[in-house]
Image (cartoon, rainbow, N blue to C red; front, top):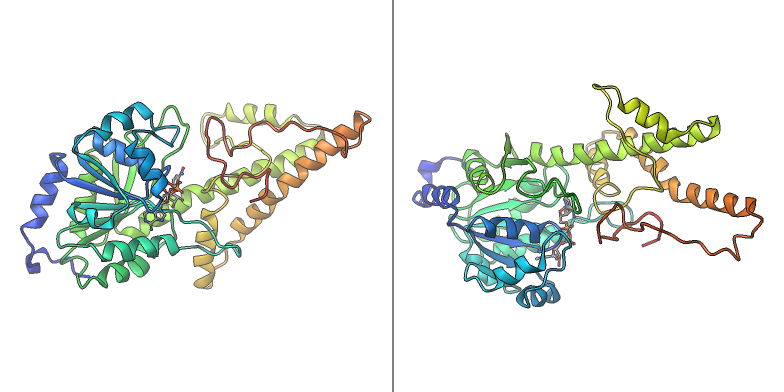
Length: 362
Ligand SMILES: NC(=O)c1ccc[n+]([C@@H]2O[C@H](COP(=O)([O-])OP(=O)(O)OC[C@H]3O[C@@H](n4cnc5c(N)ncnc54)[C@H](O)[C@@H]3O)[C@@H](O)[C@H]2O)c1
């Protein structure tokens, strides 16, 4: 990887691309039109960028062609009005991405059964992009992953195109922070962390995101940006586990944990409330810390906090079931004949994303 702009045979592309981002007239390609990719595509389109959305799921492309949204936070009206714009193109044909000035990857990063990172979606997307990559393009990975993925995994795949990172194309990482169902924070007003492989990639990625996002926080390289996201979600994972453990202790001590947490929250500094619950859900908190611990293990480092938090959070569904059985027994009924109403099966309020919900298997 070289960052020497003067050595590039394609020197004209860099200032033109930068200008395209500043002026909002570049073409943005988005790979993966899910909870992350679709709102991002809409945010760029709102600012006047031309957007090429690509997804391997034909059903999603059909829905978008029909002018319908399948994401709660993206209004169908907006998709319907974008559908008729010549600057909005949704496709399952990779070749269309050749026209993009920048390609942002928003594909899933789940865990395999043994809790190991499943990077197959990034690999597939990387191979597909390598097949259409052209000089001058900026590639940004947004999928949550462990430090080193952009440089160690994605870069070599992209370079199978015969193009060289830093000379022919630019590569950066910028973690997605979208919070589905959040009425206050959305794409445009959630600060975005950006780390480029080399100064040019960093400049380009910052210029692109600054056009749509109020605050861009630049770090030295993709590794810090990859780590930042895992710090955020590991912090939540561990603090939720602490709240869960405190709830168990409080119950034994006859303490109202909710009131105690609210009381602690009155401290104006040095405390941030987390609340107990029936486990952790969604595709971030139960998964992302495993990306960090897997990578740490590979490097011979321990992640004791993460493992302890995992054990506590994982035990919560059983604990809640035991509480329900006790309550039913106390009411003089057998759990076998009881009808239990479960309310709020998604991992948090006001969302339609049921993945990794703690109360149901699968
Ligand atoms: N959903 C969130 O709230 C959220 C928040 C922050 C970060 N993230 C991270 O962002 C990433 C994407 O998450 P998501 O929730 O949007 O996932 P998602 O499952 O909603 O969407 C991913 C999309 O990628 C498509 N896809 C899969 N392989 C592809 C390929 N090779 N080429 C093109 N498209 C492909 C899928 O069809 C799907 O439409 C993950 O790494 C996730 O951890 C998600």
